[in-house]
Amino acid sequence: MAEPHAKSYYAASATAFTDQPPLEGDAKVDVCVVGGGMTGCSAALHLAERGYKVMLIEANRIGFGASGRSGGQLIAGYAADMHKVEKYVGPEEAQRMWNMSVEAVDLVRERTRRHAIDCDLVDGHLHVGVKPRHCEELQDLAEEWDRYGYDGVQYLDRHAVRARVDSETYVCGLLDPKGGHLHPLNYTLGLARACLDAGVVIHEDTPMTGWDAGDPATIHTSRGSIRANHVILAGNAYLWEKERKLGTNIMPVGTYIVATEPLGENRATKLIPNNEAVADILFVLNYFRRSADHRMLFGGRVSYSRIEPASVGEAMRKTMLKYFPQLDDVKVDYAWGGYVAITANRLPDFGRLAPNVLYAQGFSGHGVALTSLAGKLMAEAVAGQAERFDLLAKIPHMPFPGGTMFRTPALVLAMAWHRLRDML
Figure 1 (cartoon, rainbow, N blue to C red):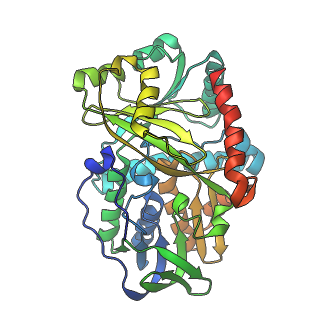
Figure 2 (cartoon, rainbow, N blue to C red):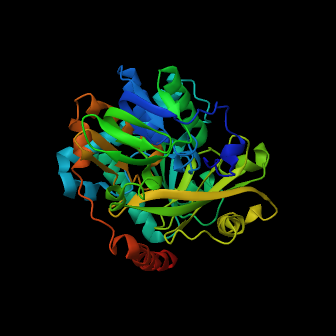
Figure 3 (cartoon, helix red, strand yellow):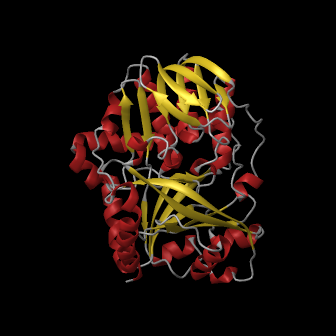
């Protein structure tokens, strides 16, 4: 049986979506997409618009994974800095990768407008620092973005950042007016509705149990099979155990969010007057924003052990009050969490498991924008225009140390050092 969405604020405020029946029997299509999150829905939509016969299968519900419960922050760039990208692909190709990341942000806005997706999309993103050394890092980041031609960003000193975030903790910031935030589940459901309108056949409650290479390839499910000329694997953190070759390059980690009770417009506005999404630049970061109905959505507390806190609500509320003590009288209405996928170098992992089997995963916290781009690039590759997909596939990815058995304890030990550094 398919699992329901997490009991989140997003699920409670989701727009209507008709459940799609599970696959029964066998089917033949041009392209089979495995995974009903932002990546899969974006790929299916782009392919259908190119005239392909597309089937999308999802093990649970559309938007079940990170696509339906993330922080909803829309950010250009990658989770790794561009200096690292340049080392992998050179300055010219790094510029192309940067441009694609900006295209990814634009693509989310374009899809939202074209398909009238009601997902509370708001402009503005703010990186904030909590220590003096963070201010140097943010100034360096501003210079890097300027070097890549990304204009409009503004460095903020303590006084300026205090005017935008009502917390005494933050000592500097970097404002990106082209970034933003949205309701991730409603955006994903909107993409899925656009897929249906474009002729994509969607089957929920249809987990992939395996696949056979070939031309066509065959996807096996619990109640049928699909023969497809091309396959796109878009399960991210929820597919790695089914496909071990994908699991070597990513690590599913837990992240958690709370939504307060409604604060009222005046009180919510005082917290973040210009309504940007905000994220600090601690290694184990915190991120927050206002919701459309004037709640505080506060996330963070990444669990590299994937052991959920005893009480997500209590743990996250305690962290939130560290930064916003004025919310001490406010109740938490929703608390939830789940897996996202990271890579060792924090750059997305694109590739092929066979000439006609493509995948994209490991967006490492930048998934709201990059997933939509990933779907577009995989559709281009299926259509024989693989240059941009292949550029991202060139990025080398080292497996996490320790293999599948010991890499979690090894990563937990490494992250303990970073947590300690965050406190210094």
